[in-house]
Length: 515
Ligand code: FDA
Image (cartoon, rainbow, N blue to C red):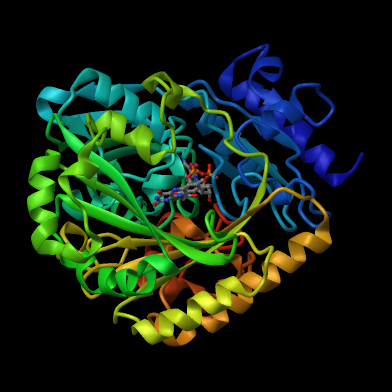
């Protein structure tokens, strides 16, 4: 019997005692020797890169709680038996930190069964359990009330648990802020296994878990959120331009104005190298992927003054008016499906991916864009997409220290560099990762510096890695990139609520103990 076997057997007994459930192991806990283990493990994994990596460990047990006492027992028993915990809600972590580990013996607490949503549209609030997906949340809100919405990301299978604890930005964030800005209460199980709400956890911990990454502090069971108002008719549209259609000028112009647009207008740019369908030549295609909270007629008038160069006209209105819930489907890439598809939790692609992020504070000159395009066009088979999302509006009005998500005034837009590939050959993976790092190096002169800021929800292990013994001082290398000056307060909160660093992963906040 190995040490980890002893630990996981001890855990099981302890879990049964605490939950007083005689058949807990068959319904709630999956060990590697059970047939369902692999199915449960893979159920929400988005990035399969880590499943096939020889260096990442798999969980010794997967617990799938159906009520809060199961979560409390998981914390108490794993702590007692020295097991690390990875909490998983939607499984979209870019570096797989909710389901794999470099070197810890660990269990997964998978919250997929805790996903109830209660909407009180009259008072513009909802309670949502952490295991719900954004798609389930949007569906439940949108079906109940056509003029209610929630500000969060665009991918329906993203989990509420991780997303709201890291920030959460999407199509109405310029008007309503990040998802984490709209959390007004929460239920969390701390390192002692105690169930806390906003009042009992206190304002420091409540501050930390909204943008600081809740994985460092506890297990979130549910969030109380503030809903947003949206008009019954919104306008969603794409305008595509390639290099022959003035894309370089338009992207360069977009960066100067998109953060200053009316806050009802969100226009992101998705740029990538493609084969031109008419000439067959490689070109850059820029998609201006947009949402306007209003009718198309109002939008046409707005575009004439805000961005006339894009050439948006009344004829582009055809098919672009819809409800906000339908716009969720539009941004998720669905064209003919019913809104029920938002309830489908299955991972969208069986693929590997890598992302990095940057913030742009000064517009990049048009001549420099030509150099960036050249860099993207060079390799034929690097499937890179640059997704550029405008800031400004409400995002810039909130102070940098209001919550740990610090990306506020002064940011024009965020760039997400994103690559997806389907081969599992380690050599292919290495080539893609190397090229991504080269691109990141190439972009250095154009983006924020001191610190070169990064967005926690686009987690990037290249920024730095911690282990159980990493100090606050060492972790500042990556911590200040994600959190700027909020990193120190996060480390103080960590020392207060989890001084023994029970909740830890490769990029968790280390405790900063005051002597
Ligand atoms: P997952 O379950 O993997 O958890 C992520 C992290 O949070 C892990 O560290 C985990 O331990 C922790 N965690 C999860 N649940 C917890 C809980 N209940 N309590 C404590 N800790 C918990 N972002 C964005 O802002 N806007 C967007 O539009 C998108 N779009 C998008 C598309 C796609 C395809 C992907 C893969 C990702 C995004 N994201 C995004 C990024 C997304 O917000 C980020 O990956 C979230 O952390 C995902 O949360 P999940 O719960 O799905 O992940």
